[in-house]
Image (cartoon, rainbow, N blue to C red; front, side):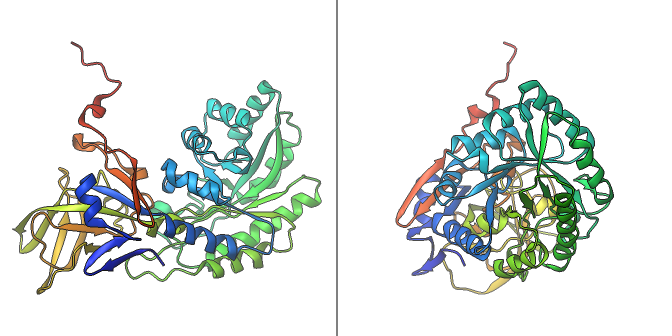
Length: 415
């Protein structure tokens, strides 16, 4: 569920009209509902209740400081994939000891920063990365806590760009090599094994592949514990899908049941790393209609948001529901919603059945809370959007719209 609902024909975020936000802040603008984010966090946390667990929000989905600070208040841990994301968590008041550091390309500088901060665990993705982490630990005279990210060779059945558990994926260590790598780590003085990690992909709509992967990983965890490795955490990743259009993803309860069935007898504290399922439907992208035109027998609606603001449709062929902010009566027709960026792939929605909107009308692109602003860019010299957080009847700007001058901040103009 979410808290975006029409009130007397006008779409609201909780108790605030999106028209009011657009009039005050302009467009394009991301709008988030704190009540939706809180509800989604509670549902996931309660689904895994009754057994030791830690919900580690995946910061790459949306790293806005206000959202992170809310999650801190509700007891969330965090999953980061860069030193910059860890710095955001710390700035928001997050506990580094309840944070895991993933990613295939951590630099030694990032490792040192995280280790000094007191990171809960590094998810190591290669033998050479483990060696680098050992060097950093020895240099700082600390033993860096780690898990090996195991690649179980499982097809998650999701888009190829967000499937991470295939044998050809760049992520993780092949399952057959993981046990030997743990044995090798026992001879290193700069690291200590704390867990095992696995993540097979994002926008999961089937649980069978996840269960198959976790049964392998839980078996490895038991073997390693039997060999004397002092493991505590079993990181099962995230990736649970959400409904954008007509998908039917499993519920958090079914997700949790699948995890418990595979890992319940390990005695481990289970770490889950939801991102999209928490914040995806907690956000919309507000955009204004600029022009209408006909091309090749198609009706095009040109809006002021583009692929630099919301990359997912261009990158993945992703489909987001697009709805008018103010309900308008009339005959619907099939049209394409396109952005202003000078790329043919800058199409935010194809074949959408809508009443043809007038120039100046507001549209809301639903399900834009995850991988929206976090993937935004300034391509075509376009400042990034503002972000607004709604809490009940209060709407506050939690990121100012970039100014044109921000586009060249830090550059030298040669004059």
